[in-house]
Image (cartoon, rainbow, N blue to C red; front, side):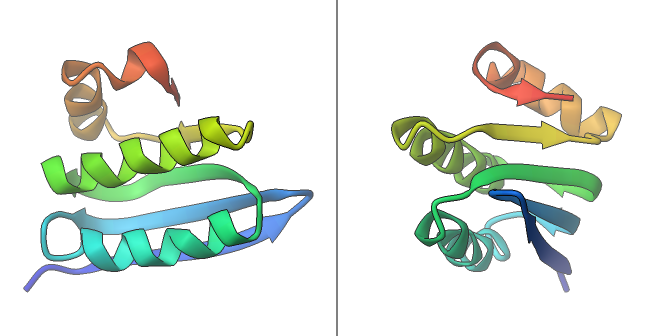
Length: 102
């Protein structure tokens, strides 16, 4: 069984979404729906990946879609506290070239 949790806190026009677990083809559709609240609220977005253990191509697609929506609306998008294994995947697919990843 895959477990994933996204918890959102909002303040000063920014939504910080803390991710815990595995973001894969089973969990990414629900996460994508949760992110819609951020876009509906016209907020900047920070994804806190400190608890993210794994991300699949489906999860990466959600990140890319979120980045594009933020960019199109002139909002900031940032990914922070990325674990080395997840960071390596993001670097391999070129996210470091277009996104603010720490």
